[in-house]
Image 1 (cartoon, rainbow, N blue to C red):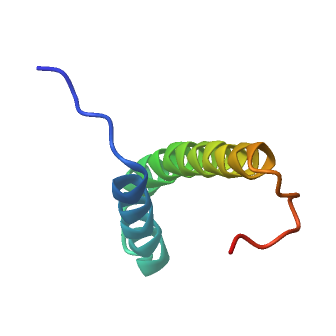
Image 2: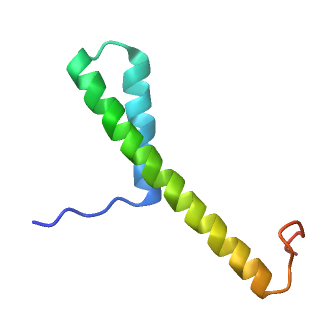
Length: 73
């Protein structure tokens, strides 16, 4: 069975859950390391997704004659 790729929103929600588990401080060390590793991967995925979205917005703005600093009305 193929695994479904998580959306940005699902990834962000999972990252938030992992952060809360780590902040709670009662996970065994081995589990905490797994949470940390998964969290870093989710963070990288979310960062990449946001960067791609920002680039898309900037491209659309330039194509419509707007500079990066202008407001879209």
